[in-house]
Length: 410
Figure (cartoon, rainbow, N blue to C red):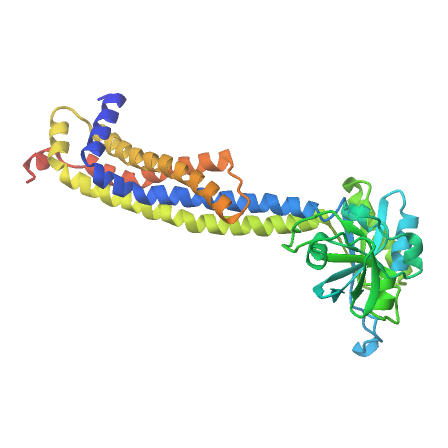
């Protein structure tokens, strides 16, 4: 019996029990569809996360202040626990000018913005004039504050789109006077829309002001030079290792740390953040795909059960075929082929359903979707493997039947 004859017999047997075959394929169909949808959402979310993190800045390196304690665990006065200073950033910019393109301290506080009868609670970012260069951000209208205003602790600010939309819904905010807390500030400019950040926050829900003003006026700090974070922009991320090494050495020297002392700062680059976030996203995708793949195994068990029933129902047919010359290998091939046909047809329908479902879900919920041809093909081929694996035992049982016993079977 040649391959085409076996295929024709297998297809005829499947078609003869259309309803049962369709019900058997349901587990494979929904299993494949679930795997494709989960992978599409996971890959899309991962790619979107990388894109959003990229919006956080151009070749950015962040330096965070670590809490510093005095002897015997006694804390110093307010501000003394912050090991970084704006002067550290200036020194880095000066000493590593061949690597560092821009530098800005960053401090932040949460405060109420008030204009006439409208108010909005938002984050106030204290930064330097190079902050926009680092964040790859632009002023849409008006101007950014100047170096002179930074040195003079001027009460000026620039609004993000979300803040402006809530405080000045129908008018241009540039040149207006607002209150941040109880302090009057003049709005110098309006930032272009930045969108959602890599951590899911609204980047436009922000107000930028000179860090000197935020530290002295809004936070009333006794240590205005101390900051929680320094942001740097490098000329190239190819220099990242050299930059981290030289920045670390310079800061240790400035902070007078001994050789056996731990760093009182942390240096993190965007590549590290991207790698971490992508790793978390990929792990979640794998876990969800594994859960979805369980339905494929359930579908495979369903195929095995139906094939065992089919073998029992067709014992006389198997005996007759063996009596007229079919070998055990022919019987084995026929039943395996029937199982593979069930799973591959179900897999094909599942792929189509998964593609439509992923795109529909993405449009309905506004989620990023990325369907990869490779993962789709792997899912489809896995469905064929499931059919072969779970169909082997029923096929093997059929091929081991005694033709005489089969012909006597009632």
